[in-house]
Length: 618
Image 1 (cartoon, helix red, strand yellow):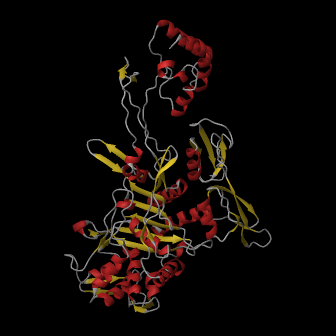
Image 2: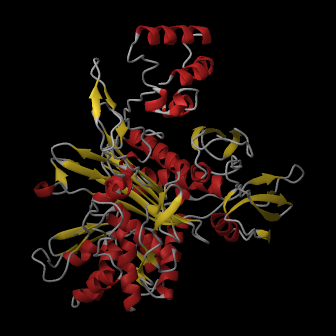
Image 3: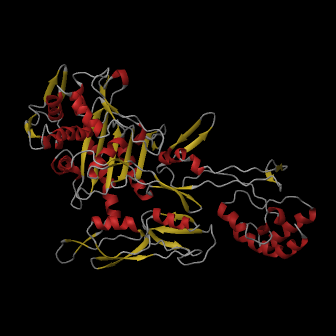
């Protein structure tokens, strides 16, 4: 460092250090640094373990801003992995283990090539304390930062899914469970929670059951089963099925209904709504016993025998038993009819139900939408269509009606509410333990599930909840899994769609204009259109603020200028982080919901890399 640089900068440096480091006064800093220079010390420790934000501010101080070789500021980088949302979607976000065996998990593992960047090359010198510093050398090569990726996960929805699932797992002392929230039209995974009972007695994300665990689904498989029969025209929803006293025998196997005494003569629609094992097995066996290949071909045509080929590694293999297989038997049709002798992952089941909600169009689940380099899109992933139509329009319409009936007057009436309607199917399956079968001694373990979509009239989200091995004596899908589904659906609906209020004079429920907030215009338009909101004006900008006037919504484009802090008030955390990071800013936040306040305020002039603090509404 030249004497001129020292003379011109020491006072400013000493004044600046207390703002970021503290410890000493300006005169104190000037004294100790000057003494070290007089002694001829080659190195003087300023501070250990400073944050990246603090380092950037220190690098702007006099002397230090001249760089390492002219100003003398030496930094030793320590990389640390931080999960800002802690356990939320931890397994879905994933990691890379580069030990003796390289293990790649989740989004990070699957997108390693995009995220990794490139290592640099530098000549280094070891200090007396053991640290290494970079030495100026013409052969040094700078490292290149990796790209950023934009995921489909919504931190607010993820928080809701994780907390609702954990609460129910604790209540029923279950071994593990998962919950997935998917956007119907795009296949975007908005939340994916996977929790397993740990040795500490609490639940943690340790394995991605949602995409990897392929099990016998039980009664949730009755939807594709009956849709296959409807497509072939061998039944209609109004046809009558005699379920007798609640049991039927096929060869040496007795299949029973859960209701003592059975349901007697009921319609096909009621067979589904009441989840009658007897009714479903009789329908399939009687219509396909002489032509089982026709039945299985229908299931195959609905893509149930294929992996989804999702963006993440580790998808479980589906199993649809085929006539002629070694294990095919006379029992295969009645067992398959209520979800045994088939295996599917929760995500594969959800994708099928999502296709029904999407009027027959099956879309591939999506976890990542874009890859960014310095805020610029270098790769994008559009929604992929697996099948334009898994069944005819008539069959899809009947399937929807049957699922709505499950909640209105079937096995899931506990999910009904007055604000919106849910459609779906309960599932309760015995868990097979390899050669031990379904019973271990006198004990039987169960898997409880509920899968469906909401609002039933115009579906925006589909969801599945699976709870494995509840052990407190309650194991039915409507209670164990359906309760989680309803909590997720209620909170997503309440925070996304609209607010209601009661008039003071007549206690009638009156809907105000939907409270859309601010954010990404296509998302807002889709939600408002689903609610038949009156849109007065659509802005040209991608990012908009909404203004309410009575029952009318007006959109105003948000103007994001380079070098100025964007206005993200009223946005979801996901949208706010996206906008701010694209502006070159870093984000810290407190709470969840929508952005209530921001600091610095919008319009403030700041340097790239500055931190914006967000206060959330909840």
